[in-house]
Length: 618
Image (cartoon, rainbow, N blue to C red):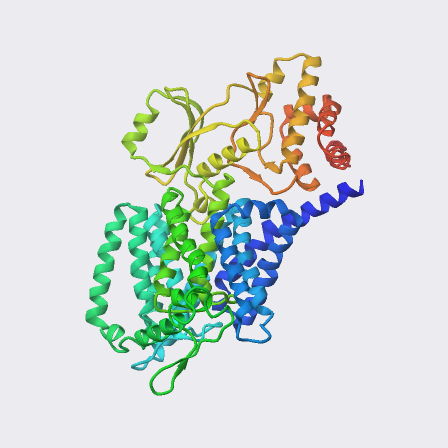
């Protein structure tokens, strides 16, 4: 009994950290620099709300770490970090800073945390990113207004509010979210979203220009080219045309942006860095070695202003191999999996970071700061997406845009199974497959981030991996009016409600007992089917149970809590016929089947819910 209670408590902690704390931590990591007073607060946010919770999650379930270490990007980062720590053996410092040992761990927790979040709560990823982008947009707009009001020739916008205190570092974040809005403009099919995203893109681009930094402009060019290449839609030509017009406009209207500071000593810095690298080309100077580059006039800098040169200086060619592998593998993986739009976003952010890293940065492993937006955050997102896709939490199937004529042809001679005031909802097509239509909803609802057709398909795929029969998904469609649709091969059989109607009392009792066992199996596997009732459970021709109408479902990391189990029953109790069969006439058989799988405590909670519901009110 004590062991079961410990397991139950461990599951609740795991669910709470994974489903609630990690999303908050990721949101703050992406947006906090815009409103916190200094970077130390960002560090505390990240350590307390993302890194430490991820470490606890891995300790609670070591099998998750094994899954993460199957991801090539995670393996490459582990090798890179291990070599960086080994390099401390030839450190020029007598007592290396203990913080150097924590940094690789915190960065690895970013990879692991993104993997867990995108596997167990991937429906929150788009809202999190959108919320962070809106925060960046609002604060950047305020900064731009203040900058314009006090503008004097030669001024560069620093960042204003928050911890942003350097024009070049600030430009990294502005450019990062500029790529995000560019991605939205390139891929969104909803006019309302485009009307919001286009001005947002213009504002973030204006913020980049106001910093006077040229590095993010080069990086944005590379990101646009990559986005055009991977998205490959009619807007790609518009992006390329916009890129050309933008370059011409900057050259004509703001030529000083390109010419006024010359090379900013980049060639001199790179030359001096290469000379130092040549002293220890294979093993590097060590992870904590100090790099001082003195320019003419006595000005001293501590970075080579190139990520690649920084890696070569600190950990040599041996450390450079896993580092360059991470970049190459991430881009290759994203390109091959571009049918999932989130890979397009993450890889575009990485290409932006690579472009910015050509002439900026140099430290290899740091605490969370602006440079994370150029390298570690995009890499962690790609690793997390790949991790989730391998575990079938994300759809690999592309969504097809279908023209009205082609859709009419698809529905020709179809039999309407279900309809509402707006028209057919479920149709049986000529080939025997089913077509389910999900009407467009308001643009600000969760359905705009995660269309219900994709939820239906994703839930079906995940149920099949859990061994629960569900419809086989054939195609996903995006309709002209903003609605979406899915075609699937239906499961053969009758709904459980239909099956119970045709049976006598004794056979009905046996079937209800089996259903109680099936419901307990769903709960133990973390399946929370909000719309669970006898009309959505299928008794198939082979005698097994299957599920249909799957859009309104969540699959949690652990077995359902007793509260969710009770809530699941409350939904079934709303249907008079279901209530009569399951909770009045044959409840003991339902409870017996449930108890054969679930714990006595969970079964007791089910009984409590039924008794509470059936108790007459005064």
